[in-house]
Length: 181
Image (tube, rainbow, N blue to C red; front, side, top):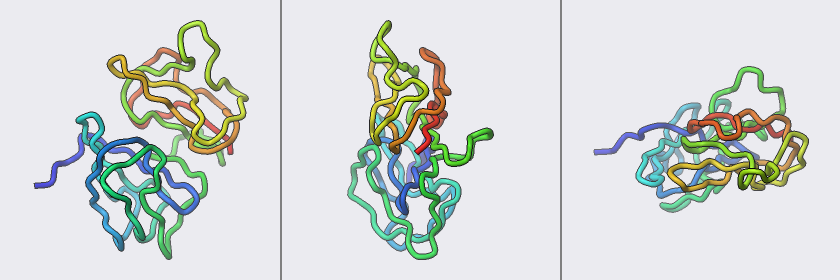
């Protein structure tokens, strides 16, 4: 019997690849040669005991041509999109957000928790609006049960908007930042 995920997260489509939005142990559901289309369950990720379904994001089609082992790091390549695939460079994970300007990448929460823009109270924000950031640079933190996870830039660019409120709740998949590559 295959266990169903408790919630889903969209893989991040970038430069002809799909990459993981978070870290964890993984059970694959789309082996090499699998047809990929929007919403297709690719894998079930175990992250701190929570089962997360990793799904193909909007605007992606093609054939899975390679899959890594049984553990994923955040931003690790999950598969390439094969012949006939269409991946928009820099497309964001998840559904299209109303009001998201063309060319902007949505940076999303990978878990439920409390968002913090700075490393500690009274310190400057990691990445206020207008900050030039590198790929994988820390933009903020999400705290769950006294454990902090970094929110990282998926691409190099400039922070265009901080969507989440500092100290406010976020849910997995919520947009936290807009970054313009």
